[in-house]
Length: 240
Image 1: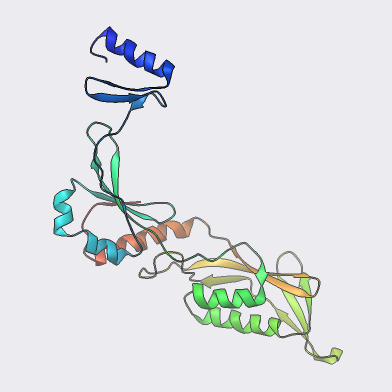
Image 2 (image 1 turned 90 degrees about the vertical axis):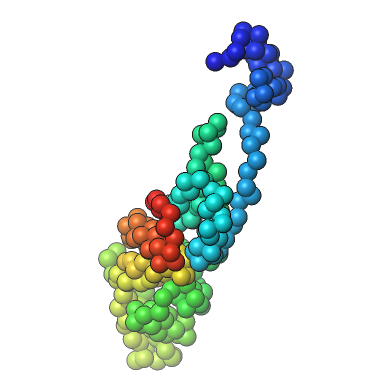
């Protein structure tokens, strides 16, 4: 509460006049009618790897921080917080680790050439990726594609020349087990199920990978990031 009625009157009057006032050494603003922070803060350090965070959390920095914790956010950004400020009861963000890689665009159609590039750069290579690349290369070099879709599965009829005798029907894969690079590259990536789909716009084929496991992988990804931090020797409490 205010120290006296006159102090309360000063604050109310400031709110009416859109002011910032100081009462008993405490600064108030009528913007949100809250105290204005005047406490010195560390500049937030932005990093791009878990290893860099482990190097930052040295004995020297831990002497400056008080009861620090680490939070893995829903978007898998890693944040280092100091203990709550005693007056404002808010944790200071000291450092954060952001994944510098642009993630793969799931659930969106793209041309075959772009999909081939994305598979080679944004997925862990395995037999499934190799088979899919081979299929996409076949689609990309054909003169004509006949698409059949019954709502459950898809197949394509590929005509490699002017003769109808060269027509070849290929059933497309349904559910694929893939490891997209969605978290920091130094961490173990999470394998998930994806649905491969194809459509045509005129004579041009477009393909997409549909994410049919949009939530379960996130917990496993947080566990993978937490494990990597422990592997680097980080002993601070980790929450996600």
